[in-house]
Length: 367
Image (cartoon, rainbow, N blue to C red; front, side):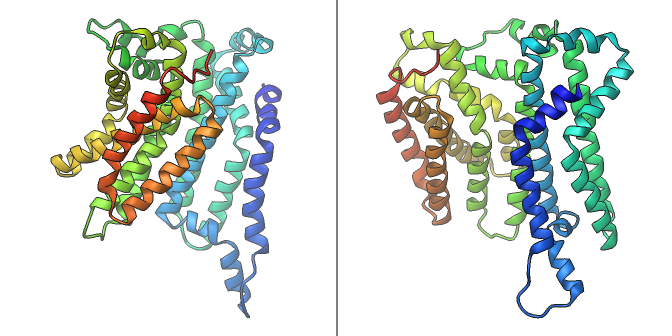
């Protein structure tokens, strides 16, 4: 298991991990200060990143997000490996052991995969205690331990319930006696087969919302901070938008031939996103003015529909799509900063529909 999962993960992602952690290490030991500075102060500057992580809530949030992204990459790699025909023996050999032995084995496997995070979190304890920060370093180590245990538990459950995967607890949604619109099928599929990606996206979205609101809590005009929150929430769902388009083009391509008006084919998928964004919508309505919350929801939907329409122009090529996404993000950010945000909904709706009208059904790149 260690050879297949731990060593294999490092073979595939080792270059990226080495680059990130070596960059931090080089910063810590080779940064120079301007002028004559006491040795004590030089050491403090060298350890600035780690000190910030154990003392600044914003840096703690960034560390948590980085840990969750790392865990998501580990889980993706695990799923790919167990689906390979060459690794089918794992289902028989591992499941022959007792449940306790299986869990311990998976904990050790994921512990080795997460060694970079363990080393940095343990280093934060040493630095934190040296500078009299106690709570955050311990909390960070407990969080890494929780992620390690969660990955071990998920791996254990995945292998022991592989045969019943299609009859998961969430799967009963498909059999409930109410009409399920064709444009909500991706949302139901996400609940059934994409729970990890969905939960991680929600966590990132919530962290972004809280951090941005706290950064601008002294602002007299809350409009721009909230619009930034909406833009960042939409951005955190970019992978879901990409996968939703891919899902529809692969499994629901027959919609192209249904006698629906073009505007309905364009607006229909927004139903998916109203369900997907329910936590964020509820948060807006509970914490802010209802009318203004509805305006923000419209802004968010206009952005999503535009980004979704871009998929018909770029095709399912992530690299090409991301270039257009970053252009859209920067332009929207500038419009918000310079108080031209009122242009975003009409321009996004109009441009999105025109792109959709010109490209719908003409750029099918999914077999």
